[in-house]
Length: 293
Image 1 (cartoon, one colour):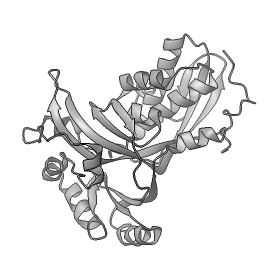
Image 2 (spheres, one colour):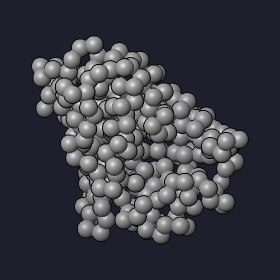
Image 3 (cartoon, rainbow, N blue to C red):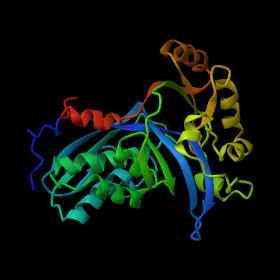
């Protein structure tokens, strides 16, 4: 295996770990083990965490900066690197530096995206030559959202989110609000009043405008701040919940209209202005050979 030396083209880069949005989320059933069967559409956002990798000759995996209240060994980026090492018997080590920009607990997939960037980039840095399918399989063991970030393209997903096929959707400007609350995903999926029998639809149905999120009513009932954010954002465009939240978003056909909404909301809410993209910024950068320093 090639060593991750200071001249490696991937070594000097800082790597994006983008946000995702669920443009639609239907719960169409439940497996005997309790996991919910879903239909959803994922699209990426140019809003990113950024990750750097520093070689460690000792073979140790460590973090340059730890997250509050998260033990280093439990951090998803460390677990992803350790999983690669144990799967491939790789002897190399790395110190991981994460620049956190994505809000935690907002339904944008920040932790899962960080883990996917570690899997994808270290697979190159360490010359492990694992296939995308294998990396997605490893990612699924870390979290249900990790595979989509490894997949790297907007997708229609089914099952528990692991059955993925690429989809092309319009790349709109987007405004995202993060209410000052953390939605407990397990609580939402355990709620008695949650709809679990939505009719399965086809991609053409989604394209024709079926964009419902079956978690919306339960989340708004239990988290008034999410409901309030939806009301405020809906004054500018059709506001939606991503996943189980807490983040809500609205898409715009122009940067001008998105910016107007952002400017109007930024003094009341934690709000982000960005652009939706079908190709993950991570994969766009890898095609350039990791030239961003």
